[in-house]
Length: 279
Image 1 (cartoon, rainbow, N blue to C red):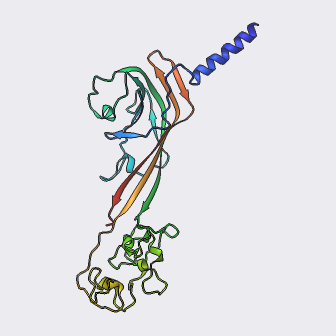
Image 2: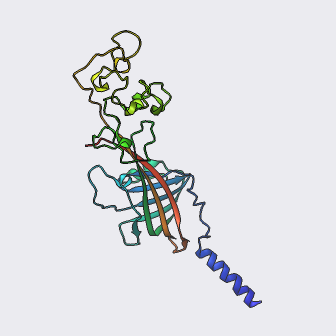
């Protein structure tokens, strides 16, 4: 009988060390990551909060931030004496996002329980670039139709005719690849002479209709009205960063020294985008 008692006592002790202490839900799986300050990442689930604060003193240019940086399995150690911190709190009521973005937290809501954490925060980024022109150009990232040094997948004007690729979608179906005004087998967005009249699109008006047939001159082979001033479109594209944050391992300890352990905890993924203009 004593052996059976000791066996069940051992199971109870091990289960407590594995994170089954009587704490609130600790379920942030369906909540979004929010941010404030330099690197304060937090989640709110009703009256529960989970906060990661990192000292991310990394070598980056002025345009880069923690969430617009291409992290490759970067780790940040969180210890009791370090500058990085992990905190789990229950509050007297649900806090607003601004609660974490003030130097002096408001007096309400109040903290009812608190666990401080230690472990290793793993940060990894899925990085992508896109000119959002409606054309899937990921098969050949080196393709540069107009030879301007900007690959098509981040070039707003793939053929260099001063008509942006998204504006070469003449039929308006969201797909520029099926618009070929002169029927030469080259879609307009890759064709330097869209109407095949021998005058380059860049040298024809994109707004005038010289013969009044409801076709702008650069799409009308029956009109040739040259212009001398280029339209000088502004090329831009979007950089997207999907930053995934995992804490592995994670140990939380309350004021009584009672631990809650996780071999690995998925804090979540946050997506951040910014517009870039090629130099």
